[in-house]
Amino acid sequence: MEDARHVNEAVLRERLAHAVQVALQRSARIKAARADTEVAEAELDEAKGRRWPQLEVSGASRAASFGGSARSNDKGFAAVQLNTSIYDWGQISNTISSREALLQANAHKLDGEQENIAFEVVGLLVERAKQQHIGVLSRAYADRMGELAEMLAKIVRVDPGRNSELTQAKGRLLQAQAALDNALAREKDADIALQRLLGDTVISLPPPSAWSLGFANARDLVASLERHPSIQQSRAESLSAEDYARAVRAAGRPQVNWVVGKDTGENLQGDSNPWKTSIQVTWNAFSGGSSRAAERAALSRAEAGRQRTDDILDDLRQRIRAADHDARTMAERADLYQKLTLESDRIRSDFFDQWYHLGRRTLLDVLTAETDHYGNRVSEVNNRFDSYLAIFRQYAAAGELVAFLRSGPS
Image (spheres, one colour):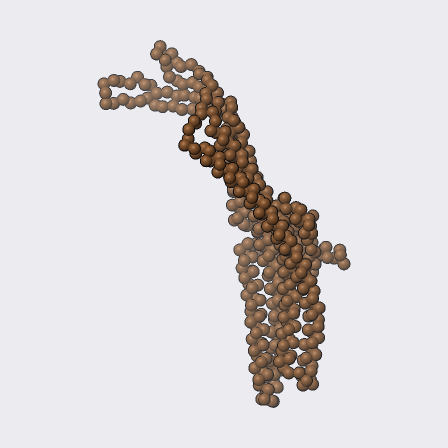
């Protein structure tokens, strides 16, 4: 029995994983997140390029003179200069570290988007399956109400005094048809939302009786939260802000560079200018406090990120525990409704026999018993599927939903 449960769960996960994969390939949000990652990679390469000697080539045409009697002897020139950073107090290295952390943050953001889309797809598929099941029950309920109304219509032809019972039956029939229409409308809503995510891809899930989805291990999921994409993204952004603050601080200190250059100009004797090399020190001694302000802003951003990380971590813990409680509570409630359904099925059958054959029950008793039975069946389905969705919500809260769908619980 346990092996069959694992097989059924594996089939369900395989179908859901396929749907998620289709959605990820189509998603504009995923493409945008990948583009952001490529931007971060390019910015990292730009920062790394500063470590190398910077070659600058310049030139100017011969200058034209006007408005005076003097004639210009300027012949124009071309120049080349090689600038190599000797010591910058860690400005370049901290900038690189900041960009590397930002690249990691964007990669984790991409993982987080995948988890969000996966749960969106799974939630819609579960909702559609639930409404399909409720639709089957509602159709059976509407058919039963139609049978009772038709039976009473025949009776009223013989006994017009029972016309009030026919009115009651027609009223319950309209309620049943409204319940069916509501289930079909919700199923259609889920289909429309799924079409936006999946396009024309059709995903069929196993029948609900074969789902056999096991409960998640909440303790293990809470322990795995350090790997959650949102946590890692927030921490990477904090590290990036800290490194950027160091880079800003370093930029406000004297920078030592080695400069080598030559131009095509001539000296007074008409000889070409020689190659020149020198050690150059530059220092932005006063900037109106903008450098210190930028550093404080980066440090405050890093501290805000750390606080946000703690808040996200606490929120995710509570989500996992709440979802675990919901999954187990709703599953127990579904089992109770399943047992209650067996009793209400017997009651409605007995009430019908006692009304139709013995006259010991009123039609209202029969209609109420039918409605109670239908309500119990719908409540069982609602709680059962809500329990399944709570299990998936646990994995999503832990950032493990995609991995769970692909390979099962770790």
